[in-house]
Length: 332
Image 1 (cartoon, rainbow, N blue to C red):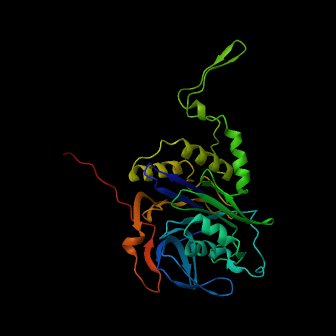
Image 2 (cartoon, rainbow, N blue to C red):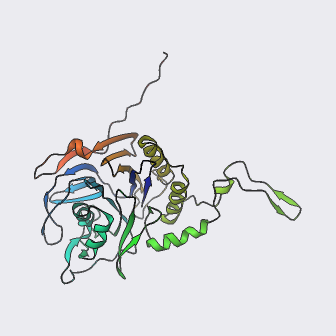
Image 3 (cartoon, one colour):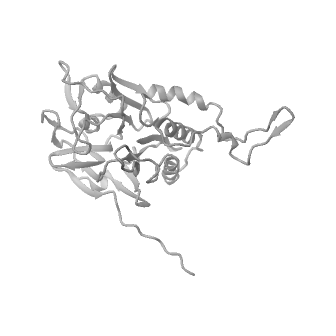
């Protein structure tokens, strides 16, 4: 369970972010990977290298390392989201195609793509192979959303019908079902409006709405993927265009508050809480992360360029979790 959006501000800066909703225990950390970083893929151990430097959130487990989301030095950004019941990976590589493990695919995109156009060319040359990860001990069902500095966005899905790259004109993604279904489902909410609904007449009875906000009464309120997709799509498309970088960051987090899941609202069939463990937004122009966690609502930042070093090793910036500090207000 996750939600992702893009948002352009008045300066033309494209922000990209996501909630990480998960019922498994994870320990996300920030990493910088330098240009020409060499790594071994989870499928077959083949050696790969990064064309571009990357700042992202990921996790390592022994020799395995995978990103959950990230941005590279060219402003290409992407994230993986759960796609349960629909993801279907290839059992073996297709002739002439590069085999990439499903858990490595996001890293592979960030390492090699400077733009969405690069992604569209690269996907045609790749076989996505299902490889169990150490968190779920399964080949976790995933799909991917990507964007670049232009604001263009796409969704990549691998199902029984093959690998598809879908243009994403609304810049929103959630979980199952397939992306085209979500876009069609938005027609259900065509009557939703930020404006006040008018009174209605039922025979001799006049029905008046309860105060402001009646135009939004059709918006869904649950935490299923279709409901979160619809809420995020409505809110981001009705925001006044943010004028400054700071205003954009705050707008992004306010949109995501509407789809964030508090602990206890959703329980998995393993009797574990499925909740929003962290929320991140990143500026594709400056390659900066803005993030907060379930335990700490204060927004923290991290920059690719302030932490970049040439070399051969991953640069670990530490866990997203930070100690909570409450600011005190006193008499002046």
